[in-house]
Length: 537
Image (cartoon, rainbow, N blue to C red; front, side, top):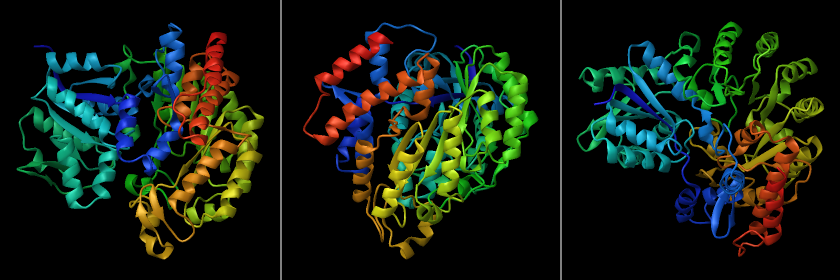
């Protein structure tokens, strides 16, 4: 009966958008989650389309195009979590297999579930913000394999375990109904121990950082900090060469050296640690040897810190003359001319900027360790050298009012990042600001909150006003698109003018329903322009 697989990894589930929209709509169209999602889709001929779906419809489904990439979706980007965890487990004598994308590789997954002896199935949750995609995966697993034990870990699980009471935790765990959950900021050591224990019929309840079924409830073992070093667990890229796409993601650091008050990540991930330039060169050489990768995404929260290391990485990439382009998150307050020149020469195709506010008052309240003046200089340099940028903003944080909001709008209009994306502040009970909630009068959580200077409803109106009125930067659709969508279009041969024209057309369709909520389908004039746009591609 097939192969013996100690651990099968199941990659990201990009749910069919119409199904996901229906789930979020059921919460109420007035909910924060739905109002945020509403910026990311249009309706055409009674069918809902997000930005990648609309592109795929015209470019592939209707246009009949064929290329090496296939439909535009997050599944095109090879999962760093799967690559890293598979390499980690195999170094410890365990066999692994994977499907990179649940939807794209669904038939392949079914065949693996039916035809192989699988000890454990691991579902990383790096990209999930809700449990609905996981529930869909669980349903299919149980349909085709009743013997493999399912293990869940990653940020979605860790956040829910840390930010909920015991009743809510038990409800969440039982709803998903996995066999084991890993509660750790890292978790790879725990995962390897659990899989090894299952393989050799040992007791999993003796392993730290695990939640397991114990009668009608889930019980937890004691917690301990893992200290897994990236340099000692480099990805073995040759393991994936036969099924690798054109894009890969690379991590060169753990955690973040900053402590923004709205973000829980550094506290959860622990001390900031980064790999050496020599280790990065070794990994990039291995990727280059595959002779197929055209784009590398560095997924560190702060790739350009420390700045000396960053410049040394860029010089190393220039020296090696790698044929692939690269993109990353970028702290532009540290940009100088030498840095941006090196970025351009080394093949930078774009960067994501966590600006968050155009007001020095709000930046101080956020503990951003940056000023508006520094941001302006950094974006100016990126624009001068033709490096594409997406600037993200948080609207409604503590102290936000009409004046600080206008400062942010003015900042975007003056600085002209290529793309921008504002989002209403998400009030997390795990973020440092929560400890001072009484001081600031914070009431509510998530997208539903009030504080001394603003409420979430006002913030949503501000975000919509930005969408409709900002002229000198282009709003980027977020759901299943965002900056990876731009990179994906670049890989398919579209130039920046063609990409911005498409996003503008999509945004015009969204604008129509925001201005006139009774309007369902996009207007015929936009349909005609979309048809013409794709004929000319």
